[in-house]
Length: 445
Image (tube, rainbow, N blue to C red; front, side, top):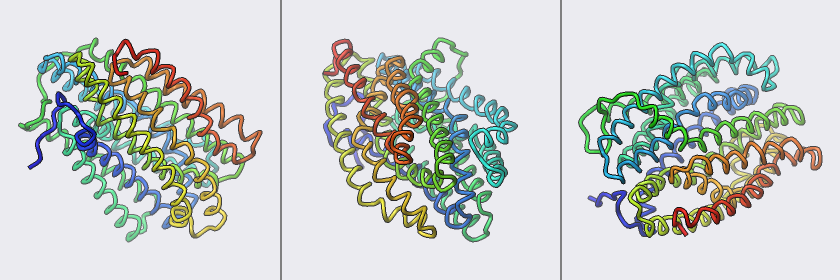
């Protein structure tokens, strides 16, 4: 049986990859079963329901953003607290955040339910798409509290030194989603409604299984304990997780803007093509996000323990790995663009050609995306939510939003696909500046 890797260890490349691989696998698998949803809807229900799914999905993700904030921000605070030698305080913070996350899900589901019709129209849905948007959205809102827990536990299980358990839970919920897609969409022909229930039930599974684990006697570093509401810890969690909060808000706004511009310039084919590209991008970004999620508790622990040598070691190795992953992903995207477009849109030659061309342009951004994303996650792990939030918000809300609005006027439809390349290039300048500015304060370089 392999030796357990602890946060306090010295990390070689091999040990760093072994510790982060479950998190990367977890995020990849989460992305893959989202891809399967889209694949079944596109091929069995048609491009109009598929476009409706992609139009309303960013709003649903917007409602779940607190899960990312509490998960990453809370993990940074909990790991730092453990590094300071305060395990009981760490468990109290953990217990409080799980409760707050679940209650937030109930609140946001109640708020989102009556808004779906107006939101769908605001995002540009025509009459043929509105009913699909509302139906899909309301089914997913039923599972929103558990989806928020699932997102939180993806980070918290790593901090608990149980990344493999997080990976196994993701596989279970992902396989369940795929099987339900086959049954409800492929066999029984329930179309978009079947895909919605498949997603909701799998998300409920992904939130409940870790909850049961932590409620039971277990061997992890985190346990549910009695707690009093700690406003200071909650504020610090939100402060740490500001990057993920604003990054996801920005990403949601940008996705909505992409869809709006594509409906304006192309119509539902553009939204469908963007949805297909996003599935590929989700898988590739999942690797980078998973690495950041898996390595963050290591950074937070050694920051709390004031171990600058190990902090420097983890940072330098991480940057090397992230850069190599970005190059590999770009090459794969260029090779896979045509066959992936064929799988999703082989039934429509116009949609197929549009998707293939757009995917090859968009994938240039993979060369820079990992470095920008990891740097933001790194500052979150250092409990510096301000720098992290500035980096992620500038990258998406400022640069990408501006590019999506302005570049189509210069380059036509292709300007929409160039937007992400412009945003990542502009963001890299600020990323390098922030790394240079704070290197002495934290001692990572």
